[in-house]
Length: 179
Image 1 (cartoon, rainbow, N blue to C red):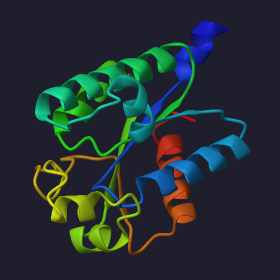
Image 2: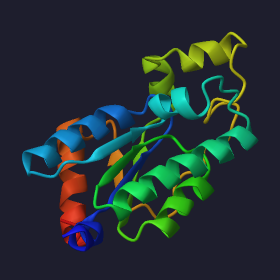
Image 3: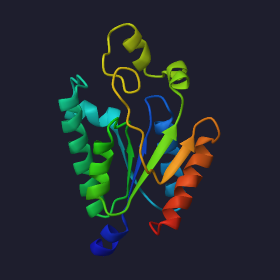
């Protein structure tokens, strides 16, 4: 039984600028998968940072270490048959590519959202802190955000509701033979 489960586990990485809607989409995707009887682990970067890097500086070295740890956890879970949703900006392609390399059934989702919309939302105050000089490495502002080159799914935040976005991801998971 464990071999069967491990072969069927998959990972979805939802990426985009901070405040693009990743967490809302991840929660909706998790709920829609649960309604189908698929229990997933959501690896949310803000929550994992509290454990892995509780006094984060968000410098490149720390980010490399953090995302290596995050990918390790996701890889471990999928190898034990637990599907994973990564809810993380992961501003460098290399972070997401590491997961793609490690996890056989991997799907990258890019939430396309304008920087102006993200700044207007700013639910965690990230952009405000950057404006006030209290944050110096916000992806899309002071740190580069590398847009995925070939994501399996592109979501337009201004055209799709979270429900539609989750349905689109599930459809792609099915088309790829992951469900």
